[in-house]
Length: 199
Ligand code: NI
Image 1 (tube, rainbow, N blue to C red):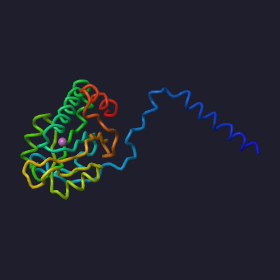
Image 2 (cartoon, rainbow, N blue to C red):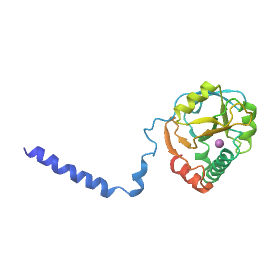
Image 3 (cartoon, rainbow, N blue to C red):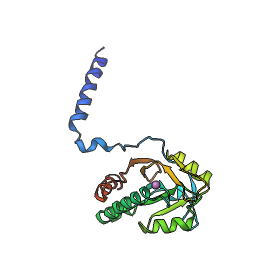
Image 4 (cartoon, protein in one colour):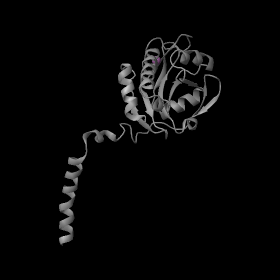
């Protein structure tokens, strides 16, 4: 069976050729979060009171952070870092950066009214969108994005805290996840991750 012998010979040769001839820069071309079950449709309310759906961002990259406006320390620092990174990216490559929509989604819908979010997002970036919604709608979007959150301390006190997971997603123009963005990184580190994927 010469045909089969030939085929068996060719397979290792092709593997070798693939390894040897590809420049190493092309190896991580697969997005770190490719295939991850993160994301999904949502309908929420933005800081101006408008209904916003995930489909409104079709064709745009999305930088998504989940937190709450009353967060005493972590959220504001993270959002500040992320938006400084976005600003650095905007300076490097304004054309690509224009295709990226930054989005803050509240995990504290009871206190984060559109008015509260408007003031919050306005502190960080002129294009940052703040989204809130009914407790049910927020629970659904958090689940779809694998985000955990829970009231901490006395949930009846008006100054309760919210424990929540801390991750920032870069999503693609098709709404699929691409990579995590290091929200505690320096602006240049954040900009570098954005530059790697947002074209
Ligand atoms: Ni927080």
